[in-house]
Length: 211
Length: 177
Image 1 (cartoon, each protein chain N blue to C red):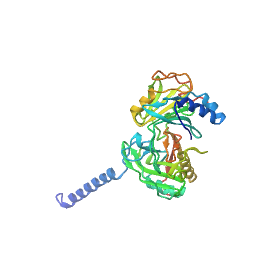
Image 2 (cartoon, rainbow over the protein chains, first blue to last red):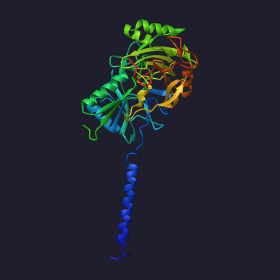
Image 3 (tube, chains in turn purple, orange):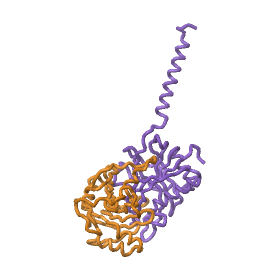
Image 4 (cartoon, each protein chain N blue to C red):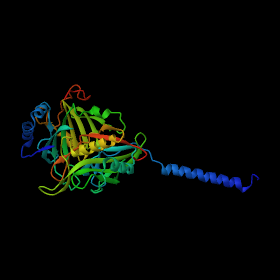
């Protein structure tokens, strides 16, 4: 073998191509870390404005909190497997996109949560934002569909939905803590009542492996 | 959440309704809390509801303007003023170091400590033993509503005059409820 033989040059080219490919995969395939910067409400449609807010975001899945894991583990831990409900949008880093998924505990009066994966965060890891609530199926006096509970012994329907998910996940061994966001704006429901979050958002850590 | 039906000249009437129809303990508590609203209209929007919440949250809300909810989707009224006891809601709540916390942009509005959120569509002012939260569908409207704040159940300044400073401990959240 001489220095001029093609073998080392080919090996060099292969190594270069492999290195470049690895860099491309690392850049394009890995999570693009950014700070957590979600809007504190969902929106009826995009673009997201303060005027088309619909629900408060009150649950954030973290660590391995991809929306897919969140969806599967909501089914597993809470038993919410129904998929019906209207589409809402989430804002993230100034952008706006439709939700990724939703799960509910049934079709009538029920718990219901909407989800969207957000930019990963250097501290929180993979993140999915969620708006959870309990809602009644309103049939009287005028049928209007689902309306979030305006009050109750456990707070509003938004607070009840958050608390239920927190209880189910912590009972299954997940870590959770609460952060004050103060997103307590009132939302008029189809039965004419108003519902609002109490301002506390729960952060739930998800595991890499579903269980 | 209990909504109070409204007629003309409603703010004082609503306060009386709240105090008179609620549990005695609640009415007593709110008799000690200065309430602020923008009167019968805020930025051209009529006062359409006064809400009293006292469960996992504790506030009186003045809702201005209407919106049209749909099945499975509520809607945000164009403007709302919530008045909380400062012992339950105060600016120090935003000082948490927990990951995912919400940073408050501190400022001064009407001469009292305040914070700006949501690009100006939400303002929080601390005055006396109250925390006044303004929600609006735009930054401009929130500012105009804040300028129109006036006392409901007292003789505090009206219009754009300075509000009373926060009570000692109100900013830090050390007031007793």
